[in-house]
Length: 276
Image 1 (tube, rainbow, N blue to C red):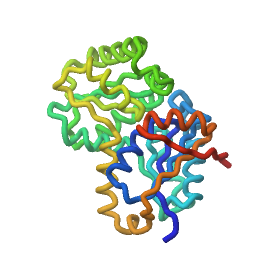
Image 2 (spheres, helix red, strand yellow):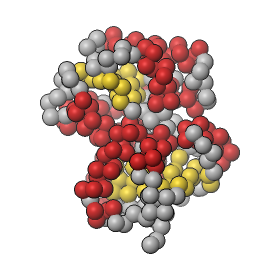
Image 3 (cartoon, helix red, strand yellow):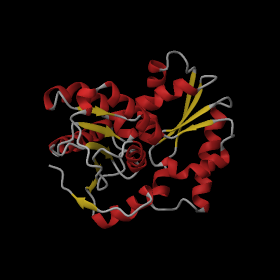
């Protein structure tokens, strides 16, 4: 069977937290990870720029044989996914699929919230897009009554520079958690709306009351993808099953490999690509 991996794309390294869960859940499949690390972060960029960059990466993954792509980036899911699905896919590759991380997270929130009060921690781009409040209202079946958000612009740099154990990390995490809890004291579910944030989970939990459920996207996306493949056998049979992981980056391999190894918990070898 020809090589037909599941593509996993992120603007940086956070998508590796999703990839790790996908590989743990679906180890028999081939995966091709693309990090647009040379142009990260996407979180502060405009809708048009994020859409342009994301489309370039989707086209690249299609060219490498991926029939199914997971956009493991909240900013790209918020700012580019809908346009790609509606405007580009029908002419670019009508039989292929591109999925994001926001919809699965929203569906999971609807399943577990008890009082309908939800908090979202995310990048400036994700929060300003209002994607989570809009999607929670649209897809929760009325279960979500209130959504408050908090932009955490320092969290991604903290993670990517391996500053997780520092006083600076504690200062910013505490500040943002206290801010969101002030916005709604009755939150019962908190979405980590950026794929970098699970690496800060221990610090986040320190300041979040234990009765509040913290949602990490990697496990949710893996669970939902498993369900998706069961419901879409026509896609499942197209995917190759060699149990491989191929890492590619738009940055230097040395930089990528050292940081990616932190996310994956094992040595990572990558190759550098140039996007057309």
